[in-house]
Image 1 (tube, rainbow, N blue to C red):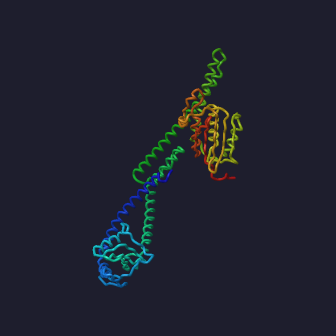
Image 2: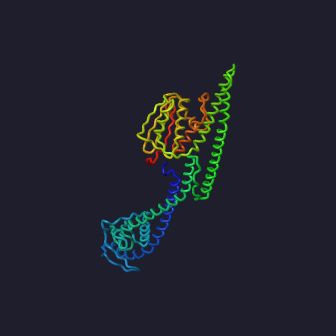
Image 3: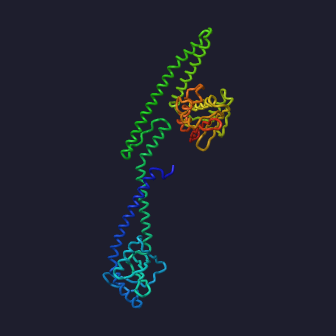
Length: 442
């Protein structure tokens, strides 16, 4: 996720843009007004002191400088040219004082060309290039009236500090606005990954956010209640059906071997077995959501133990992990049931050989079960994770449509993720689990 796409960044940048625009407008109006007032107050005194100098220059006489001229206030004049370190001022809107002063002096009859400044604030010298008629320009310095060269640096430092303070305040305010939404986002993510009702986030922020938070909390509570009720119903039905199904199968097996009875008896037994398998799948679905995660499980040992018992001659194990692969908290029963479901699916809906691969990195373990069958069309992969859904090619294959949903619930409860991938040929089901963060206790 790019930072600029976040709500925090957009609110923050919007505040910065609006503040900068308002600041520029304010500074433009303020400095323009100040510059005009300053120029009108300074220009008459400067003009009175500079007129004799300009008159002497117009007569071709070099004025004697430095000199101090007492007008309303004392104006001290310095001879030019400006020193090499003087900074020349461009008559642009970025220097409103100098633009206004140059215009005011022109109105007083003092023609000024270029301008420069030297010295330090409080003792700086403003250099004016006088333009006497018919004679070459001459530089004259006016001491102490305007700022020196150091004021711009100090002003830039002040502006930089003000900008930093504003950016900090804008970031804090943006965080305050976005924090309730981030809390709500974390709650939604937790609920989507675990199916369990998360702790209610703090009710704060604007009224719209508070209402949205409360509505989500109500929705999560209702959803959890519905899931609990459905699981109780499935568990109850499954438990109550197992005994009648067992009696039906036993009664069918006790039927006599009379002509025409054997085929019907086998049909009854077969259908009773299918019904019993369906009931078992119901119970697996319920337990996948209720089985406690209280163990520390070595996934590598579990896989080796499962494949080492039973009829798994068509399964190849590729163990690419050195040592134990610890998951915690975990349930060995759920993990074993998930791997069994994947192996059954690979045999019934795919083709051998079946490959089980376990590999690890610094933070995760990846368990992949691959077959070499026809695979699954990309548009069907998401729907296969829904309970009771079966692909079009599986209509004639015995099954309940609960195998993959049970696995998906188990993986999600362990904090992992499940993906159905095209193995070309075949289907690869990849389970990715976070590894335990501490070594096992002795």
